[in-house]
Amino acid sequence: MFDAQHQAWLEEMRRKLFGYACALCTDTASAEDLYQDAMLRAMAAPNPPDDPRRYRLWMFRLLRNLWIDRLRRDRRLDELLNDPALAAPDEARITGGEQSAVNRLAVRQAFMQLSKAHRDVLALVDIGGFSYDEAAELLDLPRGTVMSRISRARSAMASILADVPVVALPLRRERGQ
Image (cartoon, rainbow, N blue to C red; front, top):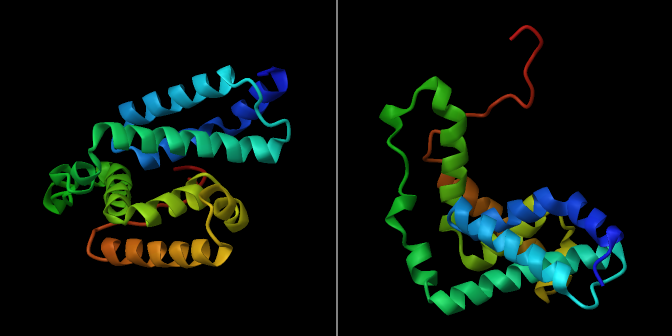
């Protein structure tokens, strides 16, 4: 039964869970719907896990399974992967103030060009914050497979982004700026 402890765990993981939903979906509205559906499903579950690690894995698996169910229901996987809206931005129109947004868009577009398997594992590890072992357990894959997919996905992202004008931004502002 959903109780205060489960609610506290959900609150701790909400940003990473929503980030994972955003990584799976092609737009924020769909990610919000997916995230909310996962929250409702979790709160209505008769026997959620009582261990925080297991609960976290269960929540990400629940969200992922809801996403897969949506893909199957809509039969839109091919449309999502071949969406012309994922074309690279016109770099001539980019101004300095827009660089951060362009960076995010470029990374998102590169991410969406990866195979489903690579997007899935990269989203779990780099966005969801799962360890290789946890991602392997969640995806029912050997740890080595997760590690090789992460390596290949990161390499593919780097190759895709090599031709895009992504500018490194400072991690934090210096005082006085």
